Image (cartoon, rainbow, N blue to C red):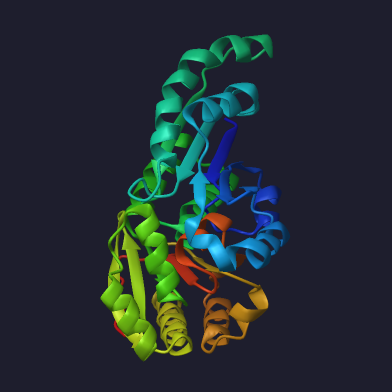
Amino acid sequence: MRIGIVVDSACDLPLEYLERHDIHLLPITVRIGQAVLADHRNEQATLQFLHTHLAERGFEAETTPYTVQQVRDLFVSQLVIDYDYVFCMTITKTRSPVYENANQASFAILNDYKPVRSAAGINTPFALRVIDTLNLFAAQGITAVEAVRLRAAGEGAPKIRARLEHLALHTHGYLIPRDLNYLRARTRVRGDRSVSFLSATLGTALDIKPVLHCNRGETGPVAKIKGYENAAQKLFEFTANKAESGLLTPTVCVSYGGELSELRALPGYERLREACRNSNVELFESVMSLTGMVNVGKGAVVVGFAAEQADFKG
């Protein structure tokens, strides 16, 4: 069985990895004033957009995911011919309509695929499964990497589906914003009151950074730490300890809202890299998606991994 993998462009994995493993993208388009960019996970294009547009007016950005019709057209024009079963993994539906659009499109796809496959000389059934990763950004990468591993191992679609859905429940994403005022302005534009004016003002004045945790679609603060670099160091050390004690998959994903050289210079990051090397855990580094950066701000860092328990304390 030919198994395909689809993610949206908020999924923080390196473009080279996506291309090497034939992972298809549902791009999300970002508009800031008159500037428009469809996010295809091109790091150079993302960084150029960041430097020229994001810093000043990024909090005003409009993000537009693929519509139901666009998802349907992508599948019917290409994927129903190339594959027999497709897993489409999306950013959590509590933060984006990508999942709902893809899920609605799945009904039209399953109604429309037969003539297309028949014309291509394929008379076997086609199936797909839309999976809510229940997480954001770098943490979305955990299920995608596992899907690649299972496919390469020759596992069948039912086993892959069960594994991915189980893994999504135990994937943990941690985010540290650099600029709380930006995050507050962005959440106000989105109608999200999760970062209050008082907490943003006090946090900025006292240089207190929250560590936000996402699991099963729910996001909230788990610690408040003085200083961005100190917060990043504590998060990297926590993740390193998790990698050494054992994860549900041998994968850690990290994304950063800027140049990766800045990420690698943060205190504690080399400790994380060393822990992953010594524990045979694959560490994926990527520039944060444009979608991620307009929502959480330049310089934010996100870490994702899968574990039964995640009990971060600052």
